[in-house]
Length: 414
Ligand SMILES: *Cc1c(COP(=O)(O)O)cnc(C)c1O
Image: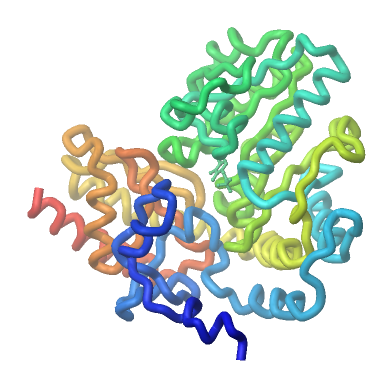
């Protein structure tokens, strides 16, 4: 027997309390500890069942433990895990081919998270601008209340000052402008700008869709000044909004696109996609990461893309979206004191709390969770729904039933 197993570390009892004792306190996880999941069903340590309308923050789009992915991954686990970037591998070559065939891009770079994909995009944009135009062209323009990840560069670029406080000195030459404000963009995007980074729909910032006119204006301003347009599709991508990537729906093509979250359905992977003309400004040694493009992650992502990028699959996302919006519109109409109008795209949906209940979104989701429905928030004022894209009509009905019960209990307690 393995000495480590004999010592009991892999089987000793652990509880939510253990988190507070041995984890760095960067999170405040829910009281229940999930132990098992399938599709949109989750069970906790007590065996209690939950309907998951979070997908692990827009990640598990094909459901938990999706059998197709389990199969593909199991085969790969028994074949090849990792060799490092001194060697390429078949799954990464297939995945890069699939992503470049399906999008505007000619080339892909793989990493392990959304922050890393954005880090790569921002570094590439600076390198491109510096070699093509000179070091004066280094400014990065981003939007207020945007979110781009937690590395020092990506929090600095992100538009939420609370995430950079205490981490100074920060990377320089970064400016933030209000989202969906064309005049502000026109004033900020000048000749010294290397890149403009934007979420086509802001996720963490409150589920706010970008106006088509706005995204088009960013495209034109970037073309005029030689800046690169980066779409952060870490949350919006891989079918979440009803197209493979949201840019396809906006009619605005970026120069660089970043993807992560749902790309691995829960197995860590990030990707940066771009054109030949931009990619050539990175060369051997410019950038890299040990695990980037490893056979396990790319096998999962290849099967995710293959499953989601089908017309019938994407049409169903829009159909499910319309059904959830209809339910939420009824809910807001029935409780106008509690909710504003639901907004979003596809299955990335925000339900804003009305004036008298600002700051209470999390309290409401806690009541729903007690009743067996897992929901997200986006900031303090917005309840966010991001069910797996395979959500059924019955699950949509059940979520509506639990939300209404939760609202009644929430109001009774308030
Ligand atoms: C989640 C998210 C990120 C960061 O991704 P990580 O995998 O957590 O590093 C970046 N951008 C957007 C839009 C996101 O939603």
